[in-house]
Amino acid sequence: MGRVVASVTIANVASSERLRCDALVDTGASYMTLPLAWRERLGELETVRTVVELETATQEVRKGEVCGPVRIEIEGFAPVFSEVLFVEMTPEEGQYEPLLGYIVLEQSQATVDPLGQRLIHVKRMDLKRGCEGRKMGR
Image 1 (cartoon, rainbow, N blue to C red):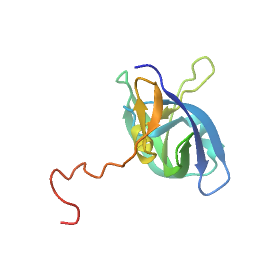
Image 2: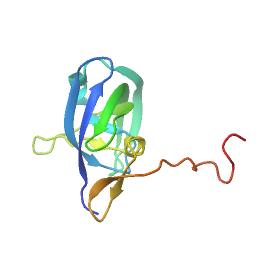
Image 3: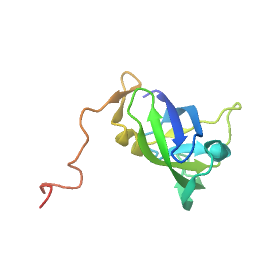
Image 4: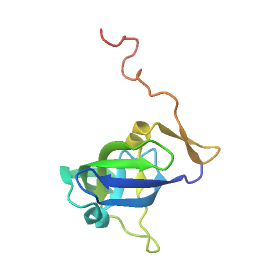
């Protein structure tokens, strides 16, 4: 599968600060992940968890901070309220590469179309996971 990149707007819900970026869609990543160098661009955010240990695709362990709440809007999809993960990143050719992880994808009802190398809308949210034959409300 090729690279899928999406235009994303992240806004601090408590203020007017916002940023727009192109993010690599990474279904192996959990959070909307931004470079620590961009944290001040979103103004004052509450730190939900100060030290989160992360394992990268190269099995390198890094530390990050989970902050929020933020409003995240993937272009073409309804906005959602979530958290962002800030992690120390090294820019390549002067550019950072934010990651759009599966939590925000699921909240936004977005999934990857591997043939079209794009995001597409999921018609229905999944309410079955974890219920294995049990009916809701029982």
